[in-house]
Length: 136
Length: 203
Image 1 (cartoon, rainbow over the protein chains, first blue to last red):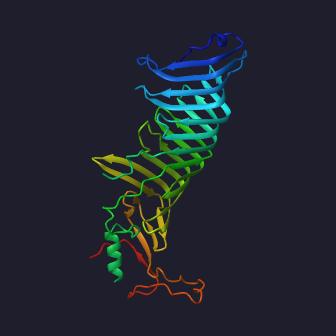
Image 2: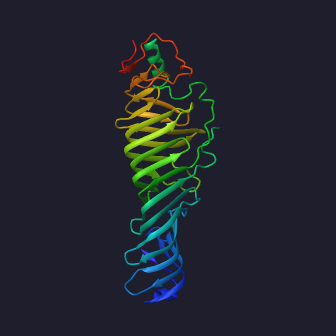
Image 3: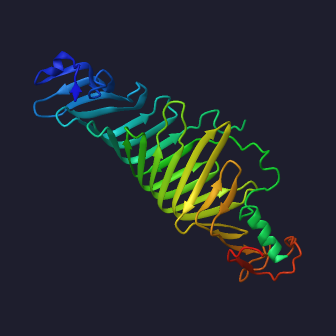
């Protein structure tokens, strides 16, 4: 369930807003815990169409509050009713400390499944921590 | 001699890939980042899992892997990719301590990484028609386990073909160019051919 904290102009049937942000919480009994935050530098809403979000950033969180993944890109289309966001453009993904970084082209974020699909040209860099490859 | 060689190889874990001297004392080279490329990928955020599909390629400074489908854990901050499953047409090329290239194939490869009590375990387990080949010969087994920390191969149900003329010209190939030193051969009582170990335990 999306509990949106959206800029006032975007609540209107049609409009443009800056500093868009919408927050999703876990279901009960963890309803106080943030599950994801979708934000953007600008959002444009037109009737019957997904919200166009420029310079979007999707931050997801585990139940313990730790950052799960951060997804960012120049533009995405956010469908409030379907609970999805998608784009044919480029995106960057990384885990909490940036040691696992992904780039690709085209994506679909499914809020209900808590899943992200990257459609093309997926490239992942997984850094090893400084301690892990050294024997004691 | 032939029997001795085979027993020795079997006792060492089935394959003479690594430098067998003091491997436990050697510090492995720091591992570089892993690069994974694929056509597409699905991330299950609840399970912290990424599934890569289509022309999957994994590389790090020590190895290259290709397959059709690969499932990897997505580490949390400060963590490590500790479990990877590669499936379908798995091929791995890796260098041993002596710089020899090894080519491994199988239906599935499972990479695991763990740290317990100050000890790091890092293995790749090949199953499903698992085979490793290098210039010394080739090894099949079910499974074949590559210990990456010690750069050592071992296998169960192993079958091994050992090229005893290792270092010499292979049959049906052009002779070495004139004016070059011949390759060094170690004397052996065995013919310059291959030996097959059918996994019969020594008596």
